Length: 396
Image (cartoon, rainbow, N blue to C red; front, side):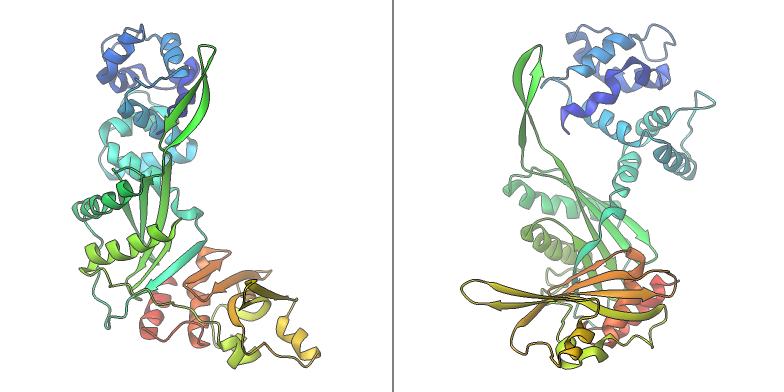
């Protein structure tokens, strides 16, 4: 974690939002560090004498001697010390029989500290969960096994083994070790969040009036979703190497084979060329009223890597007026559609790229849209029976 994440604790009033007994229990393992910084901590359980001002001064000017475990603890507590985070942690504390004693009306920071002290992994897991809903673009990999093997949510031990196996790659690529994998069962599948480091960053800082530098490893979160009915893994990750790592390692550790998820593309846009406007028919899709293509891109290649873009309110209607059709030779590399859903007043955009990528305005659109894409031939034929089961599960 970057040491500048201690900013919340550089204000005495923020420290006072935490019950003194819990604050001292949190800081007690680092008493030697605070002593070196000129701060003597009273024993845990002391109600008075907490040196809030002196502690704030230490957190205001962290240095390279600041214990990394302390930085981690304060980072996660800071991130979850919000009203929304408090609601989640109170629920989890009740579900896991964690006794939140002390103040009858605890603050969000007070709750976060108590949960951290009781179950660090639980707080880290709830912190990681917030990154799941921020992803909108996914790359898809679908198994070619039929029937799709029965899937069980992996245990903590299996997730730990998966993370340790990926650490060799992360370390080789200068991203450090100690990655973590969290699993979250949801109606549309098992969502996984991979937390790992990025290459080190160096930033300028001011310490005691002098210009210095802070050297730290940023944190990154990648999201993967496994659909057990379809046998499909979709992922949102940064580099091509990370995607290949996840494709192979998730296949190996969850199904026993690095090639459980083949590299072949899931989507094709050829129905736009072969079927024309008929490829957009959706009268047989529950939840969809109509679909129109508003943009299509063609790759002509050549020495200049030429890309042609056609845009209109309705591309097929515009072509019809001019008695034109889509070009026969250029590769279709992307198409965007306006889709009117029965539960919405205005249409939403769906974008397909024929590798393995589909972008949705809303995650909830995926099951309806993919049923349409399957029936019109945009999704390759593998395991279409499984797709129907997946759509039924997602709509449950």
